[in-house]
Amino acid sequence: EIIGDPIGHSMSPAIHNAAFAEMGIDYLYVPFRVKKEGLSKAIQGMRALNIRGLSVTIPHKVAVIPLLNELDPLAERISAVNTIVNDDGVLTGYPGFVKLLNQFLPAATDEVYSYLK
Image 1 (cartoon, rainbow, N blue to C red):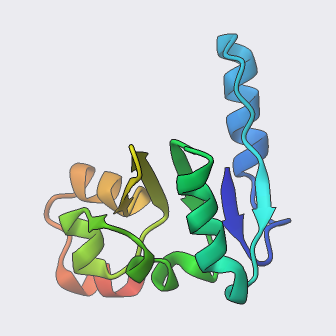
Image 2 (cartoon, one colour):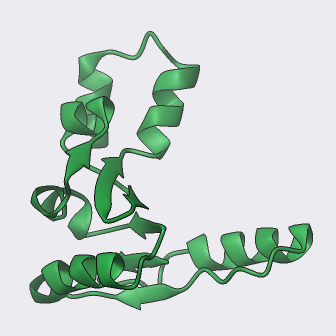
């Protein structure tokens, strides 16, 4: 699942669903338009429905942080998340793309991170 507003621009559902089909996995990646005022309820719903993971896009990458239980250290550093993992109701935010960038470009400076926020 991916949440955002707007959400129609996101290629994530098409990419993920094609990968699931190719691998023969019976999963479905669904986009949900979540307006700013509905963000808290959407995150409560993630817990209530035991949704294991959620992608986050604009405008919620920063606003969702106070609704989470934990943050990955890099997510804390850049003050943004685009992935939430649900471990038995404990929600942890991760920076996703930025974490991969850091893994492959360890010499990236704080200035680079500031542009990615």
